[in-house]
Length: 480
Image 1: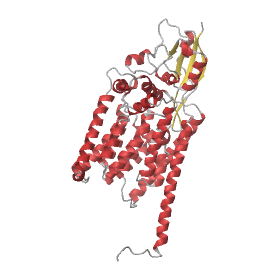
Image 2: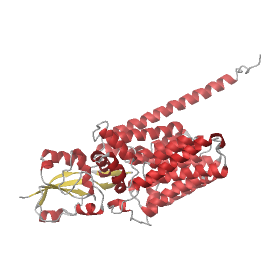
Image 3: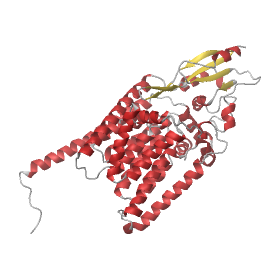
Image 4: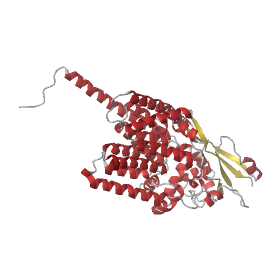
């Protein structure tokens, strides 16, 4: 009878060592993931949502489902998946406002789990990536659609490498539903898949033609839905006008997204681009990372959006990483660059966790508590400009007389109207946001009109090692 030869005594210790080493690494994976969840959840428990978080919650709270999806999303410039989740949480499960950040944290933790347990990077690099600033704070603690980017982008990269067309297409469709940035990253991954299927012909199309056709149908349908839902309205106002063309922000993008000074970030990005080029996945990396960098540079850029470049970097390198990791000088250099980059970003995350834990991210919760105490929700109250939307979720209706809805509809006329205190109306209270530290540019004018400050609710929107801007609210009362 033939069979496998019995292992020699010399081979048993080496096999045992390999098994033990793998078990230790698996244990380390679970320990790192548990630490991530614990850290993020502790900070979420102390986080006060700011205006952008509140706007999405209010839109989902106050609008019927189809009106929210097919009308308001034209003003939010969003494919709407985040709003759908919030709508279901409120209208099906009757979740309170505090649940929003926990929903975001769970989605972020799922993305970190996919990264830690399924990505091809060396484990130390995975661990640093999972604890980096955008993965562990900006797109985890702060509840915005970007909490879903790593989850669906990581799943798309995972199924891309496995050549699984239908799961890949589903992940792409969900990635498109996150944001405009997610659509750009999804487009890059689809370009790479099309290159392999149509040009290189190294994906097994003939063996599963129907599955590939189904995948194409899913992706095309997702693209059509994005265009139908997220197409900007003609009368959209505020940030949704997309008219901020700033050609001098490239250095800020590289500094904030990667590492400063900007020249260092540019060199790191160049080295990683060369690595992707040599891996055979240049199309994905250049169109994904480069496409988002160009969008942020030339079309529209805010501090909180710049981390999408980091998520794209992780996802595109995930696709490009060699399946057989034979160590070479090139691979060693790439690992060192990634370790340095995400090591610095982990330091940023720790600083932001601390800041958010010990200080108020937004003054909205404190301002709402004061307005409740003095009965201002039953008085004549004026809310000045978009940031005061952060106060509205703490009430069951709009408390501001100059706001027709609790959320801001984001038409240009409404954006302009809520930022003008004019006419003969005298209000009992005014709620005024202060976005630039302790400087209140409206104070002198309001005092001349007979208003005096009665309450200050400080808030600081943290970014990296410091503060991006304030979200402090000053409440004024009229001297009758």
